[in-house]
Image 1 (tube, rainbow, N blue to C red):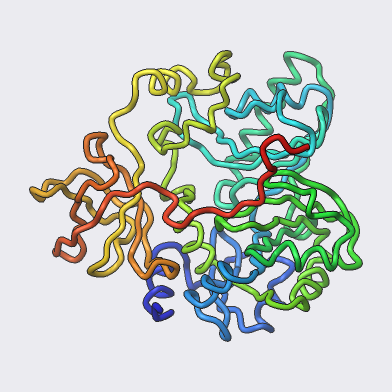
Image 2 (image 1 turned 180 degrees about the vertical axis):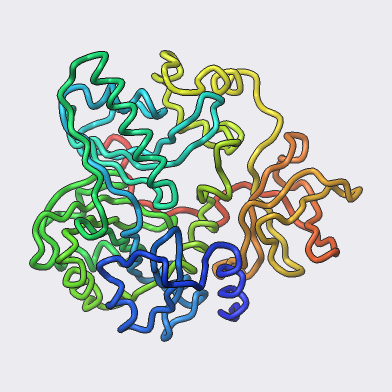
Length: 403
């Protein structure tokens, strides 16, 4: 078992500021403090990196075995309503919303004219005239501008009557309930039949005594779980009700980061950014086949060229059994000590007892099993390129052929 202190030190150094004065508080801020949350400034919001009763590694393991609640209210929640909202939103992302079933969600990306990723986000199609969007807090202002300007242009071209609403955390909170026992815990306190709610589908219902809660079966840990959008004034109440269920505990940003890395999931600003295309990031599947045919999204020319001809570099996973964890910015070298790439995320993996990282290397070094060297504090440590996820995902997916 890893000591929590080195992992906490590593994560805080990489992502978080200890300054609290400038951060915005979510509806759960006081609740976190009451429960021993170590609060840090993350993307402009004050959120717990861990809790006093459970270290990061222990919280990580608890999520893999039981269930944990994460405060993700810092994420930007958006609603788009009106005729034409599918065409409008497809103009700025790579998803096929037309053929997405109602009450289903899809991971997609905003791209720029060069094919670079401006943000990753989840779009839920409630129906042909209603979308619910969750995107990254750190890119909030940019994403609001992208969506607002695109809507203005679309209205000019079509005279469409559409409304867009950006929810502030004081209006709608968001928590993630993650882990193999998440479904059982949630079912005890909701009127939604979660057995019929499959991965990347959504429903609105009651949680505890709180109405109008949107439950989407998804998450950022690789485990089964849910993201629950809640009226902010009921968020503490809903969180308390869920914590009353056996095996459910609070978890912080530290465990969320190590869990998502084990699951091979990207963090925007580290593993993907506006200089990275979906193809280079190993996210070609985000460019829907129907959209490849139309090619009517920003940066389509470059992205489609890379899909057809390949690209010079790839995102890969690296596992190392010796030495310290490779942090963001660690140089990746070949066997002759020539620099070939750079680590974008890395940490100890509590589920594996090894250090894991991901980064970008040239195609010729991207094959699983390739030996590389990680340069950490002027020393080189051997690593093995591996496929991701590092830990198999356990999403609750609809059986093939199932109705």
